[in-house]
Image 1 (cartoon, rainbow, N blue to C red):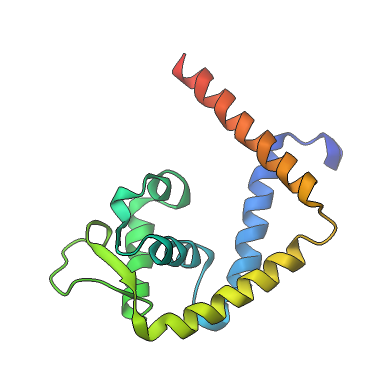
Image 2: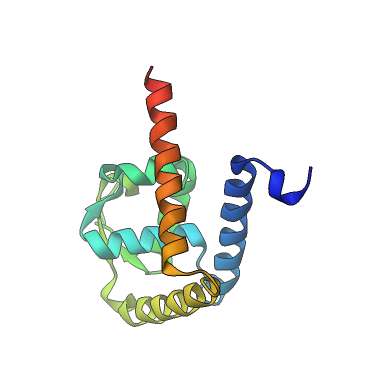
Length: 147
């Protein structure tokens, strides 16, 4: 089987693994991983936010144990703030630590630069077509699973 004949599931996993490795390398200078960056973005966009109320997190990003460990690390590294009396970091209100705002801006710039590099030779139309195809595949699979 040549490269072009491999099924879409292969390409999805390969793309996800390549993106994770690429972003993990880029973010290592900040002590972050792709998952940590994704969580920081969610917290920044929706703060204060309870991560257990954001359904896309548990469904797509990682399992509960990995999420809890990553959030714990983000709190310990002072990226995000949590109430002192928390018993479950996924079930309390989190916000970007004000002391981390400058670092967060630096990471955001780096990610935007890296993303621009990643998107070389990919037109906006091709990217949008890819997103549309993937969304339709997911929709078709969900309909099939519900039947």
